[in-house]
Length: 264
Ligand SMILES: NC(=O)c1ccc[n+]([C@@H]2O[C@H](COP(=O)([O-])OP(=O)(O)OC[C@H]3O[C@@H](n4cnc5c(N)ncnc54)[C@H](O)[C@@H]3O)[C@@H](O)[C@H]2O)c1
Image 1 (cartoon, protein in one colour):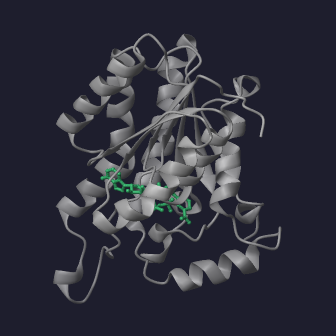
Image 2: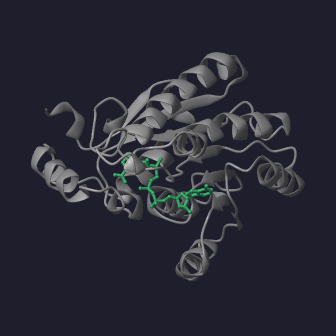
């Protein structure tokens, strides 16, 4: 594999599973050193060990932080640790791939099943707002600047209604708007930001959505490329958009879904 990103550094928020982990592996394979943020208990940590070993065997440095990415104090500690390690260098790639949201309906005949304010706020905080605060802290620390790429994962559920997806849908709409605003405010500094809209991908987060069987069935039926999107499809796009040649693709949503979104 061509070492496109030798000696460069990336930060992946949500790096232990799904598209975050696959992107970490794809970047490691291409020579990129990695910081990862994830939130796992014992079983998750055990499953992660061989993945970290595999990445290090690619000859790159890998440092993971097991923490709540939405906790301001923990974020400050992690940013300080990153600065200590690579201060003076900007991160080439920062990927927001956090999945941690409520899947409650807004309305139910039993009020105790309805979504609550704190659940909406938690979902928006982790899955959208945290992008702003991470980018602010990283930029203040000199870790985001000219040449940095920022990516956030979004889904077709950000502009269509799916069962149980109301709060996550709002987070997706918000994060797409944050990507536009980052581009608007930091574009002149050479910071490049894009949302990546993945098709429906079989990951732990998807399997938690009530009715995911229907989403999978529909994705397979509709996708004009004849299969579902995989985590590796998304990881390849993250690598591709991290290349210097992609630096004029800015502020929008790049589709990585085999054409799923164009079919009604
Ligand atoms: N799976 C799909 O079909 C699909 C499609 C389009 C977009 N997306 C989006 O892609 C992103 C990644 O989803 P995935 O399916 O790969 O999920 P996943 O469940 O496989 O991975 C989520 C990652 O986020 C980490 N995480 C969750 N909450 C955290 C927190 N508070 N602090 C730190 N780390 C935390 C987990 O540890 C894990 O590493 C999400 O934004 C999701 O909405 C998913």
